[in-house]
Image 1 (cartoon, rainbow, N blue to C red):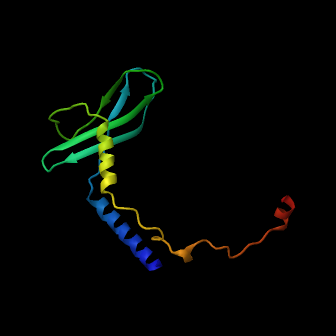
Image 2 (cartoon, rainbow, N blue to C red):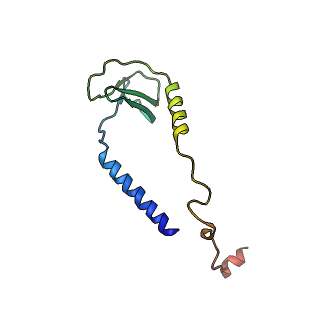
Image 3 (spheres, rainbow, N blue to C red):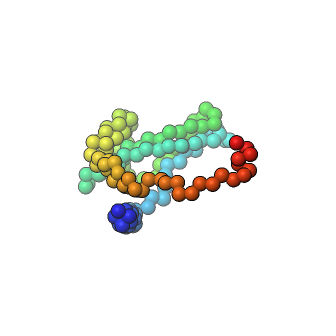
Length: 136
């Protein structure tokens, strides 16, 4: 069983290394610049959907933005090419994609898949020290 787990880990590591060598690195993100000096702007979360049909790419981007005070901001997003059009998207898109992912995701492995009954925790040595006995 341990050999099987070791092989699975090796295969998963190899898959990760191969897939990470294929992916292009992104070196830019959008930036938010506050108009009022001294106001801090935070972007704690960002979500994106990228759709590609072989000819056209569609990007739906959502970001949670907060600031230390009310302010107007200028947002800049560098793009690799000139977009054909920019439109406001619905947040419903993210819920639809999430449902599609859960629908097509593989089922979880059966219980006991990663370990068998003999791999459970066993106490093999127990000793109570004299100082701990006095505290109890």
